Length: 308
View 1 (cartoon, rainbow, N blue to C red):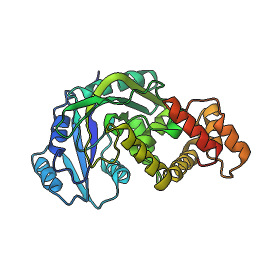
View 2 (cartoon, rainbow, N blue to C red):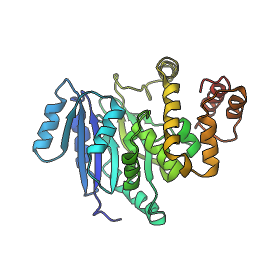
View 3 (cartoon, rainbow, N blue to C red):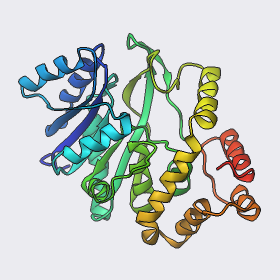
View 4 (cartoon, rainbow, N blue to C red):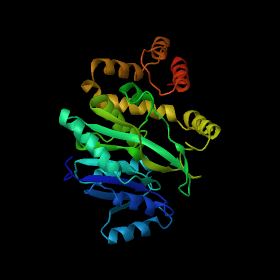
């Protein structure tokens, strides 16, 4: 592995005073020797900025302050301010990384780059759930079907907290920064699944994923709480509209670069005129979109009724 190549770790912070130091320290203590940490404060109202300013004064990170834009836009704003490096990683503010996380990821990306040096490459891994006191709760989701372009169209299995990607993926996001992305992790997954390579490091947990009472998603906090969260998100918060917009924007930028079979599937999902025939075709299209069968059946029902 060539350890001369730098990696830019990109963290978006918002009111994270309680745990952000632990996460920063876990980034700074990586076994990979060339790590640069860039943090954008997304309009915090607590002591987060003071904590970040102290690290910055010690030369341990680069700090960018801004107004509150929400997590996805904040990450993309930070990405545009970051310098050109060989590798990049998304980073949340309240988890803890395994010391070898970046070294392991870059080693696997570099192996893929030797075979296909011009392609965008995304690496992601498994993770473990921990509570607020960093006590182990359990294993994260097991993605048995793994990554695919069909999955990337309707689901984002690479959590940003485990994602590492190469310069070509970065360059593509600089060329076309999405307006309607459902998340920075989902957009880079789409790019690499459709136009490059996605590496799933199955069985290896790279992150202690701290689940807080205030966490955006209740994943890991119980079955029924998670289902209620999904109902609110899917049917009350415009989730399906955002997914459609994301797919249309991806199609506008990259349709012509896709393989014929992937282009055909994308065209089916982005058809502007809803029709019964298209809904039936989507509902019975012979590819697997989701990781578990229950989610797959529910998605097919949404297709059939023209909701998605």
